[in-house]
Length: 188
Length: 188
Image 1 (tube, rainbow over the protein chains, first blue to last red):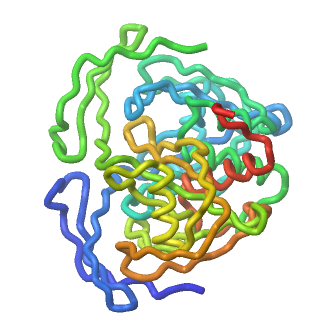
Image 2 (cartoon, rainbow over the protein chains, first blue to last red):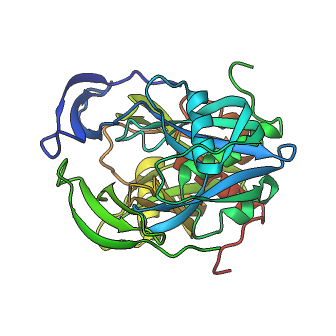
């Protein structure tokens, strides 16, 4: 069952923050009216990379400081797309900058949102295979630890206190389902 | 291997948005200095609820309009905690408001972050079992569709274009691992 989308009557910069937010006047199909606030998304979108080695058995995680939670988070390489870059090119660049490897085989697995109720942010998931050593200089303040992790051990990963990011956990399980042949891409 | 945390020398309201952001001056253990920007998190935190029925076989999803992506998203019930509420109480209230059921058995499964690199947002995951019918009025503009989904069919769920939220997908797989006995809570 699919509902009729609400009508958007107006959008305007938020009075709280013109730089980061906007207000949207909505009318739902039942006639109810609401004004919702949402964040704007700067940039061209983002990518998150599931790089696998050893016959799809092991994934490369990185350990990176996150000032949001003020801790070192263990998760997937990710970053924002640069101008003129495709999703697959951006994924390979981020992989080279953060994990020190490139991939000859890159596949777009899907997209993840941060919080569809008030954010426009979407992150493209890329599966990277057939890896080779290549490091590109990034803007990171320090070299990141690369931590190989067995895909069969995701249940141990998710109980770690330094593994918290919803997008990383979701992308890992989605890639595992794909590699097990249980998840088919719309284009396949 | 665990690195020494960077030193935080100063924090100040962001010049771009004092309401939503702040700047943090950091010094990494190798001496590198950076100023990072992060969003502030309003409120008392959030909960996301995996409510299961039929002997842990089926999970209750809801379909809710998200103005961030301007579509109806299929995902887990979730919301912000109210003042004076515990995580489990907030989870049960959101479940009653959004799915029209309460739970006699509530378990805190862990926490998910949105983007630890620049957000403080953390969402607590609650597994809800032993359900009963009870609807509480919420602030939703329309009654939400409740969509039961088999936990054994998560691979079909993640290929849907209206299932995008990283936290929902992560929480569903984490709950499935837990219910299968493959994921142990630190307190158990």
